[in-house]
Image 1 (cartoon, rainbow, N blue to C red):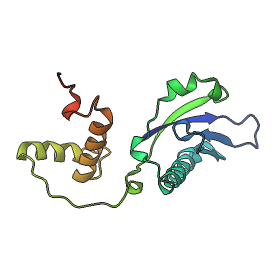
Image 2 (cartoon, rainbow, N blue to C red):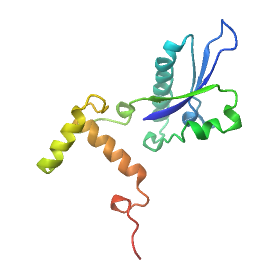
Image 3 (cartoon, rainbow, N blue to C red):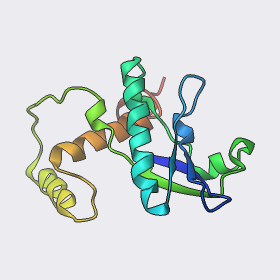
Image 4 (cartoon, one colour):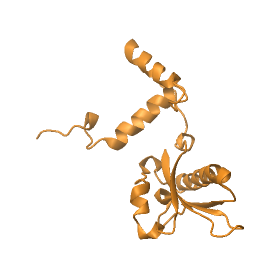
Length: 156
């Protein structure tokens, strides 16, 4: 999942970069971190995200419903006016969603070939077929306008 990250630039030489993940900040949780230099920003924020999401799972929060409003939305908020830069960080949360289960599915040859072709592209970001199908399923479930198949509204 992609997360918007607010970066507060250090004002002085001996200060760290402040990092905030607004999508994971609420009344119950807060996701902040710091990095001593720019090279550490991605790893420090990924560690913070995984830690807070792990805590959310432990406390029974449904992390499949997490949404990031986007850096433009957060940057427009007075709450983040002190943040100088914004970046996006991709963090794989699938390991925190629960135990993996093997299933048997049937797909047409042509569709399976298209999936395999997409997965094999170096910049695809997919680890394998299962990862591709899981991402596609999450996308469909999150973007569906209603509970009807394919996001179509029912006539009634």
